[in-house]
Image 1: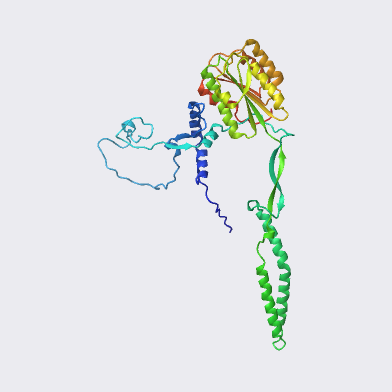
Image 2: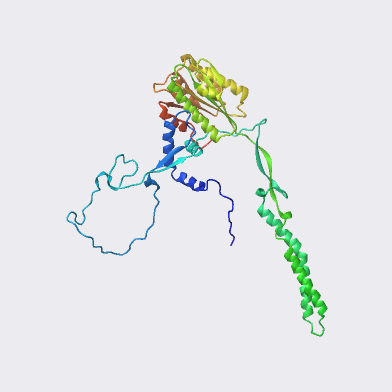
Length: 429
């Protein structure tokens, strides 16, 4: 029987595997706590961990016990209050309770607090964005920018120990041992046969000198067989890695935010939280994704990340200015043949009536044929205005790649975000 012993030193977090099993087992409770945390946090407070509590009753383990078996007769002391078959009421105030969440003191009963633990930043974000993805992401061949992947490219005699091919090395060692021992074994067999022949003669005809010579030769040959090493340096083989160009899945996300005068500070905060969730989601799950930030009122500008979230600029409302700017940037820097194009737009829906029809035509004729996905979020508790109704026409024509949702208050941000970017069964447009 062969035993494999892992002698690698433990990492700093020795219970990492057990922790992952625990997180997977109580995923439902943890996701509920994470959703509540996302809704109550501020814009700049999304990247720290979270304290999660699980009721004690939900972490109890099943236990198997041997029953008494057979029939038993028990004699219990009687009393004047109860008779056989009476149901005993629970003590007032919970009796055996008194754990976490009771809310007031009691002199009866006892219990256990809820089990509490802290999620790290990575674990928290993992639960926040669990089950989300960029819709319709395609792998597009790039001529000027190639993604390199290291792949195995045969075996070599030199390499690092971590890339050693154990199977091939043992095969080479076995072949070498056969090749080196074969002539020695033949000579040994011949010497043993000659010795047996010599010993088979009559004692008068035996040659003691010849017998001693053959015995010495046999010992020498056996010694040579033992000296053949089980594995040698020449037997070792190592996997070689070679760079191989891969088709790239690069994508660009256009974050378009309305900062006109009709957008109140509360509306802007909700829009910023939505885009911050999008930013964290892309930063965690996608390496080859670029972000382009566009702010607009009567005019649109491409801005930096810091200016996008913290600038206080405002004005009138012409939404088509932002869409025209996005279209110009796509034509200049991000050709659709090489990039996956996405647009996420947040607005209160207020726009000049004449401009809303321009937005519709611009989307249908110029943008949507090249986009993988367009997500529009309208932040308003009121009835929809002209921009929403024009966008409905676009949504009917591009139903798989155009999504519209309404956010009434801050608590709707996370559910709407998950609905817009939930994982789909197919990735084809």
